[in-house]
Structure formats: C-alpha cells, structure tokens
Length: 96
Image 1 (cartoon, helix red, strand yellow):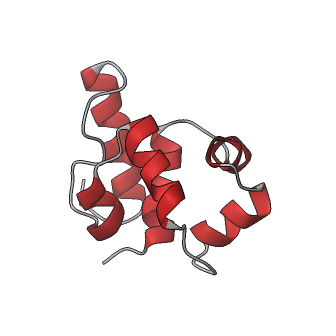
Image 2 (cartoon, helix red, strand yellow; image 1 turned 30 degrees about the vertical axis):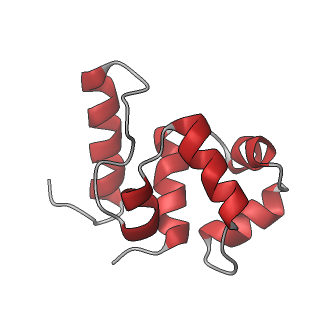
C-alpha cells in the first residue's frame, strides 16, 4: 500500500503543481510539504480538509489509496485520466 506522502505526490502531480505551489495553497512551507511527501511527517486534518474541499480530492484515495483520486473531473476527461494513469504507472501502483 502506498503512503500518504506518495498519494499526496500523486495528487500534486495530477494537479500539475510544484511542492511550493501546493504548500502555499495549504498554508505551509515548501520544506514542510517536502517532509510530508517523503513521509517524515503527516499532513494534519485541517490541511487534509482543504485538499478535499478545494481540489475535490477523494477521501478514500487520500487515506487509503482507493481510486479514483478525485471526486469530480477537474480537466477534460480523457486528458485527466491519462495524466492520472501515467502517475500511477510511474509509481508502480498499476500495470500498463
């Protein structure tokens, strides 16, 4: 099973954001966000709720890795699904 840090990295990559950009959006520093992605610390509940509300992140994916990653499509359907699939293949979560 993937870690919260890996799932957050997948979400950030799917959103086409840098660590700094998502950190700013969540009200934390780039360094703190980097520590989350490398599993040195966990994101607190307040910040998790921001991801859920502001970016339509699926709670089941965020906490347990259960797809889909997002509740609602935030890009053109085909483009979005292809981007997510590439991330999941790269992270070894699914096979090509």
